[in-house]
Image 1 (cartoon, rainbow, N blue to C red):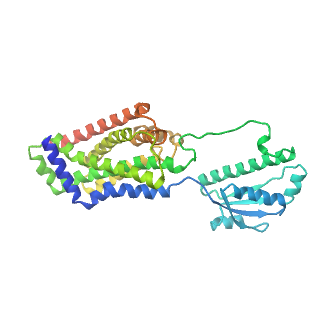
Image 2 (cartoon, rainbow, N blue to C red; image 1 turned 90 degrees about the horizontal axis):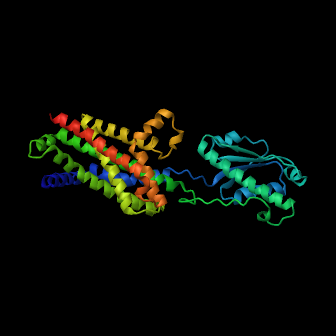
Image 3 (tube, one colour; image 1 turned 120 degrees about the vertical axis):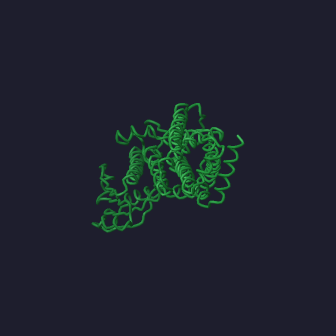
Length: 374
């Protein structure tokens, strides 16, 4: 134990004297959280709406006000009849164009069903789908009010029918930040832990200090554990900083217990450090270690973990491959603890995989280290 402690203290001193390592482990995670936390946002608000009103009636003005009062749409342009909507979209002056036909008000008064037209900029398919849902909701609410008026009912809520009262659990405001920030934590921790560990060991090999440590009385296990423990501690400290930033900056409330959160993170980080150790055994220099570490940790954590894209939408080969990505299981646990307040007992299967991955990758890296020494 004393030998492991000596190696750990030596590694901490070396990391403290290396600004790049400290930046990678402590500053970079918070920077990435802030950068992606603000940049990645699926919420659509203040949609730039242009209006082409060919009727100019009280009914058309009332309809436009319904769009504006919904708080989802901001009326930015009033267009003449036959305006070029494509040019408007190209200049990004509007995301949607509402076209009200002639005789809109007269047809409503006659009991007919006039047709509206909504033109959408579909270059951003996800935003366009969300905007379409907003518009459908506004029109549906308007139809209910028109029906109530036709039946002589003062309040649309008094109309007979099904009472629909949706209740959204865990994220009642449907804020994308609540969904994205836990995913960012898993992505950032995997990236920094893998890269920092791989670079540390490869740097030792390039400088020749690793060979000097090997000729001492240290056993290989003591050397490896002594070098990994400091990075595990620093990564856990970075986790605490990230969680504090998530609460203070993005308002993410941690509903579960901190102990469960850190226990899951500990198991996840052991696997990440083991993968970094494995990368160090196949990389010939620091540049190669950095490239392999980034590609093998960042891409799966983004595309194959459910961080941004639902796993069910993946092609079958990628969906099968996602089952060996540890970030996939960690994100399930993290979102459950943070958003739902669940305990780790509810995620026994995910925790078992994370533990198995940590043991397996440490075992493979250990075997490769022993072969290199032999």
